[in-house]
Amino acid sequence: MSSYPTVDDLRLVDAVARHGSLGAAARELLVSQPSASQRLAALERRVGTALFERDTTGARPTAAGREFSEQAAHVLEHLAAMVERALAAAQSRTVSVGAFPSIAGTLFAALDVLLDDVVVQPVVDHGPRLLEWVERGTLDAAFTGIAKQVPIARGLVVTELGRHDLVTLLPDGAPEPGSGRRPYAGQTVVYCPLDLSGDALHRRLTELGAQARPGATAEAAVRTARDRRCAAVVPDMVARWYAAPGDRTVPAPVRGRVTMSMVTRSPAPELLLGALPGLRARLGAGGVRGSADLVF
Image (cartoon, rainbow, N blue to C red):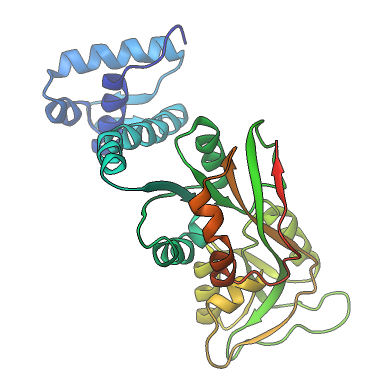
């Protein structure tokens, strides 16, 4: 592109994607439909590809349009929060923290208790995006399971929280794995490793005879396993978080370990460093052998 899209461009693409109609988007933005159409056409020329397929029935995003509109929504969300966060920062101690969906509920509940006099501004998204925002300074910290699996930008600090082995959670009524080379033969197995090993885990479970099903989040994986009365392969801390009467936990026939980490800019915020012992205890830092602070 010859130049960056303007905020008005982002708002237009977001509105068209939400309404599925250029006319409805124009009405929301209080502009004429011809003006909106001209702006969208100009933006598509700058991008170099069509963002929407338009006809008499409406406007449908292309593959490029879906990606553009998703990114536009993220940018607009951050812009909308700028003033609110600036005012909150002026009035009280604040810290912006990001986490991926599987640990967000447990993490933010723990931080609310541990940082009682601090306003925690939560952001929930996937690990790579959270790391990018920490690098840019949009976030003070990101809690993720992928810090050991991706390149870390210079100037960021990785503080290990805990190492968690994969286990097999067997809800009440779920059959135990068999023996031999295909212990899951004929069984459905739900999995959620909390890091980037999902594809490899899927392949290995399939080799062991399982009908492998990914869980969208850790909680979704456990709930699905309960509904189906089947095994769930998850990190040991997840098994502890969602333990219920009748559950059994056995070693997973698939070797795997997720390392949970806090990623910050250097130096790491003191208030978060002070909360780490309590946070490790609440997240269930089983298997951690001390903590390592690595500066990149």
